[in-house]
Image (cartoon, rainbow, N blue to C red; front, side):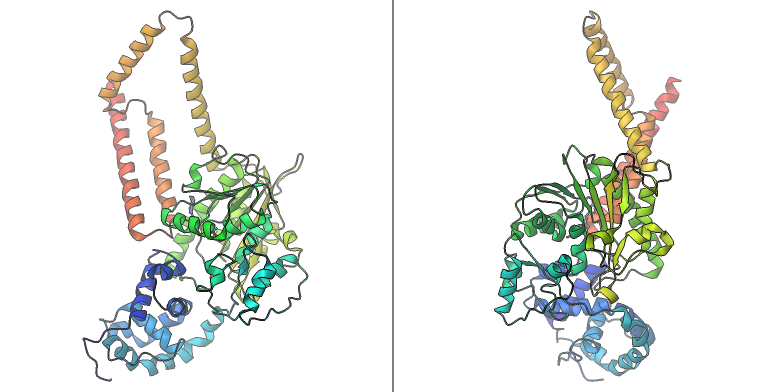
Length: 542
Ligand SMILES: C[S@@+](CC[C@H](N)C(=O)[O-])C[C@H]1O[C@@H](n2cnc3c(N)ncnc32)[C@H](O)[C@@H]1O
């Protein structure tokens, strides 16, 4: 091993890359978001280094296991070591000429890494595909021809596309750029002429195809790729309601909309599960693109196998809930597209199946119809027609990120949803119960008001009632109007909410998630305390 000097620092690029990897793995943000937040002078090198490290995650883990690097070198920073291995084996294939200790330590294992790599490459190399760099032309600010000219001026050559299909033409116009081509600093990207959006990620909006002038709801909007694509589909005529719950991601969303010059978008920083028809009147087209495992993303962070089942269960619970709300809360909705960038049936066909089984207002329509039946990959045959009707983009065959799309359309009179099994979902039962409770309260309130008319004693009775309830309030330590049933329901609701928050805030920071959990726990405890107070008062009154 060469000599090293403790005072020699690791170059900033590697330290920064290791820090971002650690944050991505903790769910603080996406690679892109964190890289751009760091404002490092060599963004593209930083991005490439991190993406390669995640792409090669399985191989790196195997190499680490076989060389027992961390057992032998316990002081090595794990993410820094992974970054160096990635650079040494797949990146520049060398490390900076430095005496810094971590660099020297890694270099001492170079031969061992390479030897182990030759054993591992066969089974894992096939997992990574070389997809081209896709760009979507933002037709709100320039035409496809203008964008093509912009690139041709720089020496790019546009290749003809064989497929006659509009979708293929539009999306692939500029797709013949080598894998890894970077456009983050391109003036066209900075001023919003192009959007760096994967071809498969363009599918959901292409399939939803809202005509200009329509009212659209984008339920999970940030960072805003599909929101801006929706605005372009509308030719900026009509309305796109873009809802995003996470406040940090909401900021990114508003910025992206501004850069794209989309005027028809109304952004809402709210939990869409708390919204309904009165918030977004007249919604006709809905895009449901919820948080998912991201297993289709070529530069994804791999979820550890022992956590996968639990993670998928949580995610699919949330996905079912959000899709159901789309299908039940917007009476004027005609077409709804559900999409994920996951390749797991648990988040895709199975979500579609569960929602369809309890809904008789919508039918599933073959997604292939919307791409002129030219698509190759569909859902699993183990889901019967549901599989046939849903569409997949698969990295190896389509050279895109992995994606899933399902399309729902409102039933016409006399039509049936062939997958409906006649059962009412728990979700709908809860919704109906809530509505009934609200109606009951409203009619009691109305009766109270009507009762005032022509009743001389009413004033007196109301004062008496108020007095009684004030006394009760004091007895119940200010919790008089809450029934046992309501409090119990709140506890359950809060429990569900805690789970849901966990599922859908993958993109939130660890601290935010912790804070939220704390708050939910406190609310739960308060609700339990309320329940006990009401219970003890009831016992006392019996
Ligand atoms: C897969 S991303 C959406 C990507 C986006 N459609 C695009 O194309 O750029 C999912 C987004 O949904 C947001 N989200 C999750 N649960 C939500 C909820 N209940 N209400 C609103 N937004 C939510 C997440 O914060 C995240 O930004």
